[in-house]
Image 1 (tube, rainbow, N blue to C red):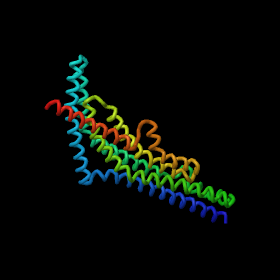
Image 2 (image 1 turned 120 degrees about the horizontal axis):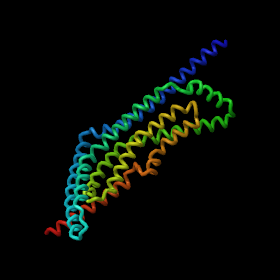
Image 3 (image 1 turned 180 degrees about the vertical axis):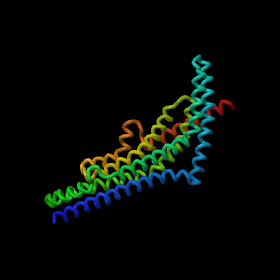
Image 4 (image 1 turned 135 degrees about the vertical axis):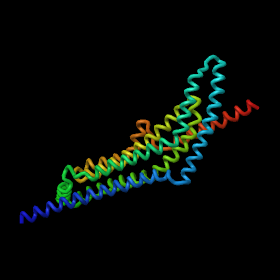
Length: 286
């Protein structure tokens, strides 16, 4: 009887270990697929056409920015405060910006998604360092040994935490490709300010793109790690699951905001300024 119980227990632990590893791997592959769909978005013909439109818009605003920068440099030179070297450096910075604002975000996002998928696959495929099967058996025994009400409350708490984390990360992954497309569109508006030496808007845009790619890399990875260690350490695993939903907010606290709201308003302000200055230059030339 002892040998039979030992064999059954060993088989049960291995089955639980394998089944839970499959579940974690399934979640990781699902979220990696959703992030991958964000990169596939930019391979569609009409999306490429839209990006080409914003590329040409960026070049147009860059040329207008150079003209305005030359006028501003001439006016400053007449006042004895002109700096031709600084103006030339700003024009060169704008040249790099207008050539890369529609390429670097897509490449960086694709690299972040690829690295996340590789690391997540390795983590979900690792054998449980804390003996997942044995830990699952002990957890079930502990829960069944508790009073029925306490057992129900604890189980409900874990289910709600896991469901909340998985659903929130899922929808975040679904919309991330669209947010990146909006960021690229807004980046074309910031190109106007670069030749004039106003780099704050463009630098803020770069931070938002980096924050978006960092979120794509970290959020699903932290969720996978939380699911992996949940059976052995339920409280720590739940903490990691909930922390995965807070990755965008944490990035925002360090200046890497992943939203597009403030960036859109700044870009629209730059475009409005370009139109007003263009009208002023045209009227002066007339």
